[in-house]
Length: 177
Image 1 (cartoon, rainbow, N blue to C red):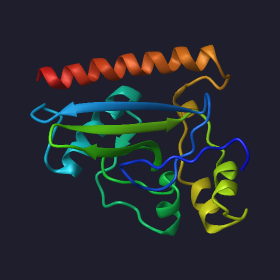
Image 2 (image 1 turned 90 degrees about the vertical axis):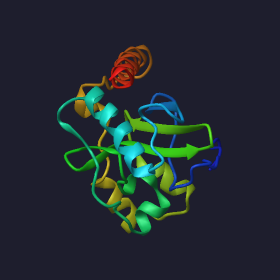
Image 3 (image 1 turned 120 degrees about the vertical axis):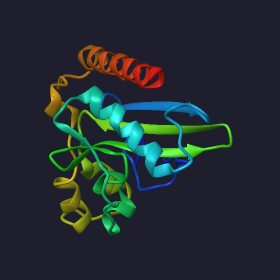
Image 4 (image 1 turned 45 degrees about the vertical axis):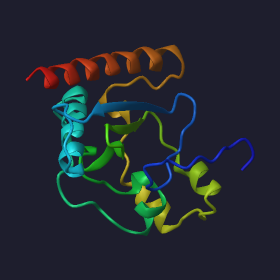
């Protein structure tokens, strides 16, 4: 598709669509030895998910069940839910992937302001009306459901900045206890 660039995440996983003003993307780097670090990747993901859930509100939940699997989630990240990811009414709101070294874990976290899967599916060569498209239509929650503004630009920027500030406060709080 013209104007679309493909990048491969080092952490693996299904495709994630990124476009201006359509998502909130936050990388959190946790050094080994930090209270948020765990050698168990599920425990580490749960801890990060708990911080996100505390940030986004009591209606969100950290996914602690087995990952949902299937051909749709293997192709597109938000078609399934994995350990530590944050849900709203059972739908994925915050996707979390991890990349690790001997010294740190990096959590790549994304939540959508707006999710229009047809563009991504077209880029992936998936026909309209497919099982993947049906799976996505019922598996993705967006930040607007929590009060994020729908307008692009400064309004989303200000709202996202406030969320990131609260996320940092919550991370600091966890680290102090």
